Length: 308
Ligand SMILES: [Zn+2]
Image (cartoon, rainbow, N blue to C red; front, side):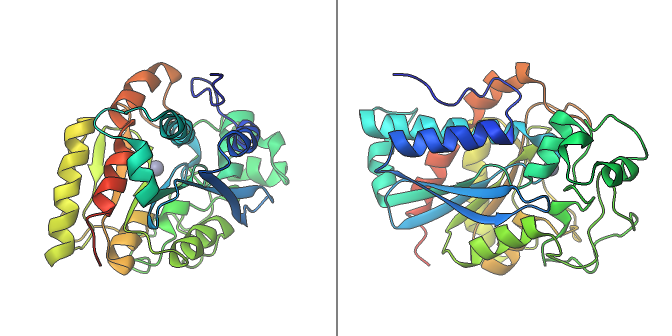
């Protein structure tokens, strides 16, 4: 069977769009795609549901521009799960054909399409190239850029501890600027509204790099217990180290907000061994895929155990 998604390439927004259309056509019965919003430059932010089950979980990637390999991973997962579903084959310990009739996984593979495109193609890809160049201090190398196209860090935008989040960076730029207010950016607003319109039992925001797993913000009690139990399972599969935050963890991230306000387990896996402030090289992909291939299925089956 022909493969649609090739994750071992610089995976662009345009490639993703093409692949979404092809996947939806091939797997009509188990994939549903929708647009959950538009980026600052007007690119569509896509969500795809895989599975037909009522219980839902959520996995997203590329909040941070330079971390676009997380999109490759999620698109690869989508096709892999669909293929196994229709062929009734197993992936590791799991049967997608069983799990994904009871649960569904919603994917938003690229939260920050303008930022990803900037990292991959430079500022000529932006609607206002001169302004982007200025935000980057007239440096033409965008490989370390994390923010959206107008210089707001999308993972410092969520209303969980936003006000007390350190604001050393007071102006828009390549990273760390938390924005003038929570959810000031259309990309975060889209993910936020999308999450509120669903009843996700578990959520994951993929980032890079470091082979670590963030799983705890300020959670307590039952939530802390359940989240920790699942975190240990993810860690066992991936080999990623659990991160234990101090007593005053900084917030603003999607997972912080999901844990704090939705009050369900949320995770931030950092894929790949540490690579510094740049995109993860494609040569690391095979290991990343091996480590993470089953994670969506693991979480979908865990979600079936979460009753409230
Ligand atoms: Zn990140």
